[in-house]
Length: 301
Image 1 (cartoon, helix red, strand yellow):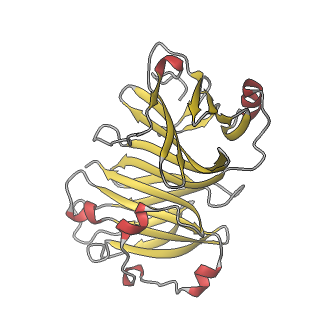
Image 2 (cartoon, rainbow, N blue to C red):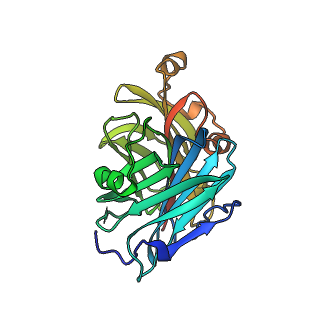
């Protein structure tokens, strides 16, 4: 969908102060994706969060740079404007260091979600060195920024997706570098059912089926994807016992080592493992773990 009503450009850019207030969700803005990369910047490891969102006015883009203590160093927000261009740049001075951000979404194609599918680039340059480059128009980005590709590949460590639906929720995930992109489907009908059932599928294949969900509204289970162990956690308490407009949370967490799979049992009944979801979802970037996808599924009955 190329002709969306929003445009990106310097006229639509707002630079937040160092407090970097977070993004709040409302009923009308459940379409939001956060992509978190670990990069080397300012001589140390930093986290760069790319936020794609969609509201009634159109698509929005946010870029935030934090240190590993989660202290925000800077943030740039590109908000919808019917009169601005869909590409631009912004130069920031952070601790006497020049950080440049470049984006071009003039040819970007979007699906049903807020994240562009192709036809775009987003680049972060620090002191003339490319730090992060995403999108398929890499040659155009390198020419525009007059830099070379990043010397070390940034680590894509986490993706957080807010999605609105009724019964079926779909997301995509790539659990290892250069690996296959998989379709993840969560299906659950909690309306008019005395015994709701939760089904999780990967590329159309059922990998988890949880019956008697009212008794098993929280749990975890380990599956294999591309030969790698992926732990799946779920918390559907709000769907079953919360407000009408509540969200469930699912996390797909890959492990850097397969040892974790064999050092712990894989149970046929995932409900036997009580799991404090609030703690695990709060920090999806724990050391020793690989990529994590956190899916916030909002039911719109």
